[in-house]
Length: 565
Ligand SMILES: Cc1ncc(C[n+]2csc(CCOP(=O)(O)OP(=O)(O)O)c2C)c(N)n1
Image (cartoon, rainbow, N blue to C red; front, side, top):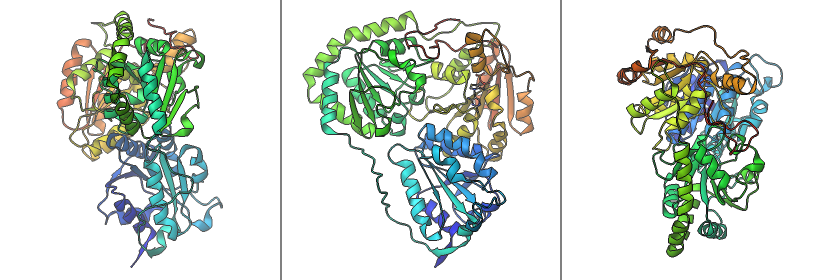
């Protein structure tokens, strides 16, 4: 029996075990939307295509599955660009399907035509234009395979309207061959052996973990290796949830707003084991003074990310969990050498403990004005350890990374690579769709919240009980902080002059709004907010010129941190 292209697409999604898609309809996808009514696929109608992609991304980060989003051609498709770029920078597996004008009109400036293959080439892992119905199933199969394998990433399928209407016999391929695309997963045995030797000989070893560890579900391998050899662990923003914040070997985040002791450990270590990390400039600071005394082992699934930014002494290409597990096994074979290592590195761990004692993460409390860090600490106390936290981008994002404890992998969803304001609310929506019973909280600034606040409507419509915390300083706080520190306090266009009534805004959408203005209202309000069913905005009027510290000024070394205002 023959099926239309739009039905074949939906059959393919079922074969890929897709149960939920996020999207927004329009003329060039109207047939897909019509057919969707007959398929057991849950569709979430967001209020903006950017949000649909972020929601699919949040769903993917929280579950480890491929997120799927659909948009119409032209403006619908171009609205997805920020979402796609966000996922690309953080290596999130997505398949984004955009409608396209009929093939005969492509290139003719047709109504709602945009060249999505051209536009998304630099921000997708791969993209496809379906020119012919006979290639559709192979394209979809390839898209999912590429999105989820190797270093994951977003894949775009641009799907012209006439191909959707055309029909052919449906049969889904079992596997696909992609010339030149065979990610290495195992890790080279000799290199793993060499890495084990380097660790066993180190005096000041340190593990530096990146978001790749979360994507490859490497929590267990990481923990095994760290505990076996008593190796201190520092994480990037993206890897925060992979190693429990309260673990004695956990040093918290490194980099621009990292802890003093992480940055000092990086500067002083003699062996840096980089795992699933890409040496982003926010992490390294000035490259010349990054880990100046260290040999570097770099483990990554993506060979092109190795040696991209820093010199590397030993590269290992492979799936992180596999490689870490094998590394731990190799070392276990030499039990006495491991004992000697643990003994020898005792002084190193004490040195780190001294740094920790001298400069712990702290802030100046206040009884008159709400400190944002205090709000984060209270949320930490009053939520479960499996709560999923999303953030927007700015100071609130860094305070969350600094003051919240993350215990379970995939519980911290934030836009690290692109730094996309407006990411957190739709990502929370996607995570809550995946886990209806878990606590999902978006921690936001007043600026970022207004970038996708329309998604309140989606939360209310689908009864998604996301809690939104707005740390309201009436500023684009992070930019204001830079203006304060590096531009002589000339606050150009960072003050949000118009005070918004976020409580009324919540109510306008049929959600609940709460506000706290004094520190002694904070705890009770968080409790109330968490207990109130349905979506809730909790607005905290915070101290306006609070800064995120420590801070490594741009282009400075990690050891040149500013510790106090
Ligand atoms: C889409 C987008 N536009 C601009 C920026 C630049 N930017 C980074 S942080 C920031 C301020 C964020 O303000 P707010 O959301 O209120 O958070 P706060 O820093 O005050 O906590 C801006 C404008 C960005 N990251 N993303």
